[in-house]
Image (tube, rainbow, N blue to C red; front, side, top):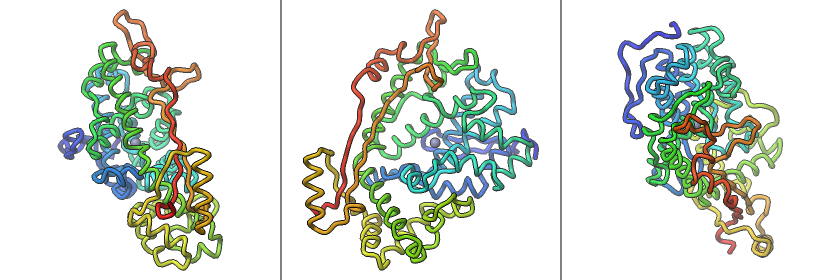
Length: 405
Ligand code: ZN
């Protein structure tokens, strides 16, 4: 197969967010059919949020196709982008869009903490080590896998490619906001994708938005702000993630002999050292959920209890973290015999809806004004200016078993 070989006809996949996903390159079609890409069907997009929004069962598979579709539209429908890239770069950026989350583990970001490795690291390993994803790219064009990985790690010879997938106005965010809003049934995440695409331009190899598109971009920034507080940082979702964290922590604390008593699939995760791709492949949500099910009968009472809580959604309660409350609650838990290492959780979340240009690289959003001057978004939008100059939004919570109250 050559790099630019086309499929016999354009293949279309029905998608509730984009209408259709269009595929007319053979390598894209073959990539979707690799075992690593199909694995994304077994990883849901949102970690704990589906414990709050019951229809949010959508997967990394559908999100990855959505990011690909937005990038495909950018490089075919936005004249400036189409004219700035050669054919090889277009294929590279479409592959990078499709594969940008291929290294995601189960339960969204909760799992990254357990494996102590970010999903980007696994994504690049899957692209560059000996996998069906890697072999497919190298068979089409030597060096292709490296070029795709370079886009994902922002090392591409052409920085515009990375900007399309990962900046502050990128195909990744555009898809997950729309998709997560759709599947949670919230409307906060909606914004005018068509308008943003119509107003994108490329100036000096940098993605900019026309002044007339700034309102649509403001709406997108606000969508992100609302989605973070209402969906991604919902305290109930964080309570579920805290439970997962405690469950893995308990498994790890059982030590070498304890690990032998655990379901085999967890062993690579709990032993020190990096996880092989063969072991990582098996760690999806289907297998982990089965592993938790087995733990329900384990001899360790804490593991038994935590795994039942995870399985049956018997979540921890949450409260605002204050010194007085924490002191009172911790004393109560101790008195009742709870091991605070596993029954007392705490987290802090902070969200910046937009990070302005600081002069040290970064990925600000730029607008081209009617007079031709280029301004950073916070200088082109009063709303964005107010957002970044207001107080920092953070939230500190503690988590504990409800029956202890
Ligand atoms: Zn993504």
